[in-house]
Length: 450
Image (cartoon, rainbow, N blue to C red; front, side):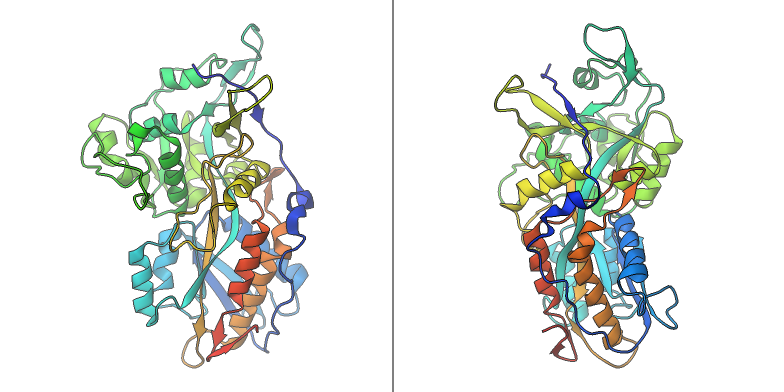
């Protein structure tokens, strides 16, 4: 049995979280021409709560004279969600570059097919930018009424339990190898919990193409054992066993498909119960909250909003000194732990270049780094033109102004639910590079923000 140590639970609130904003790009923005109308995006639900908070704050406190709730007199910021696959499809769809589809959100890295299809739709290669807008932890949320643990190995007193898990066990749960709560592998990670029963694990996932699934699959690919490549790496799911797969350069291909499809054949072959699908992060969180002894993955703010407990996950790094030397640490999802992961990952991974790198900062080094952390990117068209039903110059200027604020001052305005900060500020270098990308956007051939 592995050595177990403390669970890190600290949360960093308010502006303290983003003290690192010093040195970020200028908060200035282009002048917005006279006008009004919609500025609408669609896609990933992972950042939904953060985007909603930003929209409200921006129209109420930053630019209330130009932004409001009526598109007949002011600019209205809106986001329709639908999942990362929806965002990517809408970006190349018939509404592209209209006020109903001015930008898209995705937590999934664009595939070569995605990029080719977008280039074909736009008529020009790479005529758009992809920038990170926010980041945050994905929680393993669960409902297990009355779960208790002893306060110590020698004590008889019990308190409410916090479940501990790792990538290998989560892989076995999703692939159908572990189906009961009292499985020996779960008990080994939770020796102080006294009442894990033989009841079936009610497993939840997304029913749509999801960037949250992509991030979760990325985590499984990096954290599960060498024999578990079927959890996160592209493989053959037509039978109980995965094909031989080597994690060599160029083979890392997490998926954003619904887990019912992704793990379906493996679970069926093992006689495991089907995964329950939910629409978006909100749908998955609601399903977990409605059913005792259920578990699934959602962005932290959705778990907090529905009052769900979250599991502490084993970190990638062991302690290197002191009394806990050589022991694993278990960390709860929090903005603080997400920031630690982002900081550890950004030194070697570039979140501005998702076309060539799988850069979600999952399973980052460090005993304080929460293992499932992801960026949420925005896709924005670079070459806008006047006429027809397309967005006006003023609408595009309004989008740039808002995005610049969100990438600078807005990084300190993080969504909070039930006292829990659900997202983390982007690393300074990523913010600076993203703002620089905004300055490449043109209207009728002229850069809008020189």
